[in-house]
Length: 366
Ligand SMILES: Cc1ncc(COP(=O)(O)O)c(C=O)c1O
Image (cartoon, rainbow, N blue to C red):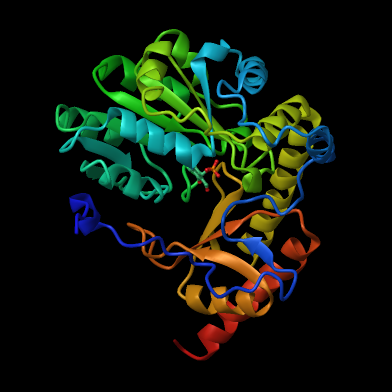
């Protein structure tokens, strides 16, 4: 039987939520950087009204014209520069499918978002890693030196900014310098956590540079992970290539409706981001007071490094709280990633459970 050669290096998707019975109790999900707060009421209202009106019998608008118009206003760019996708993941997959040839190399600033690996591998392309000396404080000098040293051996660069899971953020001014100097390289800037970054974005670079694609998501600050919606902003010459592999039925009707409503309700976005930032500040302060090594960064998540990381994860699990073990990533031994939440249980339970688990681990002398 025919088999895809590229699959030799791939394993089936590992769902680390496997075995968690979400119907059994009200789990606090702090493992996938979703929002634990429900979608805005304005989105619910728009969805109900759309369903009542009907139209699910037809395919969705293949241009997602209304949504792209609303997004154009949001990012202050022309709608032609925007493409909507079934989540940022699908955007990334389309980008790699459109630009990678077998044998090409993608430079990745690691440790970073792992879902891109299969998207690269299925195109028979390779990955090259730049791992900063201090993953929580990458310097512009070391990045620049690496890019220069390896110039010519990579064609695409993936930068997650802010970076999941380390939370680090590179200044758009610095990325601009890279786009200028490495003009033959295509820079993919994944801004899934943009709304938590205090307004730092590479979108304005698009007025001058065509070798950059900005990827965004509705799954984080917009609280719509379940609807599956994302978008890219790029020069039309880039979009022309991507549209060769793009599926016109990519974004379903309800996702388009939800996206438009969510974009229009900026008050809801701002209030959610503010709540998350406040909860994060309190959480970090509490954990530092307990003596934990905690890296706050710019996303809606934090990273904790501790010898007792396994015990801590299990103790939270027993309390109905899920978090993400990131210890297998480069330079992230003993690291846990925790999504920030405005659920009452977050500040009330998580710090004390972590402290108790760490203290009893130390008592056992392990
Ligand atoms: C950096 C990054 N990019 C993309 C995604 C996926 O976004 P979406 O849900 O829009 O596919 C995530 C999800 O966690 C992410 O962390």
